[in-house]
Amino acid sequence: MTLRIWPPAWLTIMATLAFFTDRIFPGFRLPGAPFYLTGPILWIPALWIFWHAYQRFYAAHTPVHPFQRPLAFVIHGPYHQSRNPMYVVALMVMAGWCATLANPATLPFIWLLKKAIDTFVIPYEEAMLLKVFGKSYIDYCQKVPKWI
Image 1 (cartoon, rainbow, N blue to C red):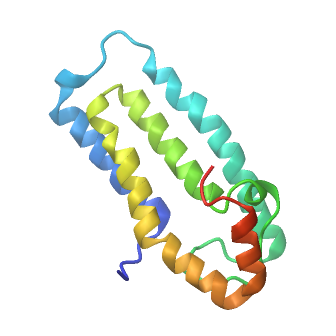
Image 2 (image 1 turned 180 degrees about the vertical axis):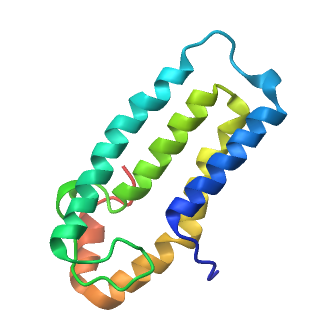
């Protein structure tokens, strides 16, 4: 499928849907638990990973946007551990948001975000990287997992 929506937009859509799901089904909220603290606990390392991943792109003078042609092959920093650290960050942010809402009815949106990124973003990005970087990208894929 060729639906191309920028990953932060997917995160915003899923976070908004989770918010409204929490409001529609308030009876599912977990009472008295300090889940509001879980969001920041996940967001702080997520911001750190994002900052380091972004810095690698900036240093290489290549666009961060997944639908733009890359000018350099970024494989250092967080990209040494995962081929998609910025998408891992998005999942961490979404998980933190769902935990902050403390409503199990919002948890499917974490899976839906991963599914949307896996279906509509990563295949396009991987095809472009393969086309631009060829064998070096294939070697990288064999060494580094897609997700952590």
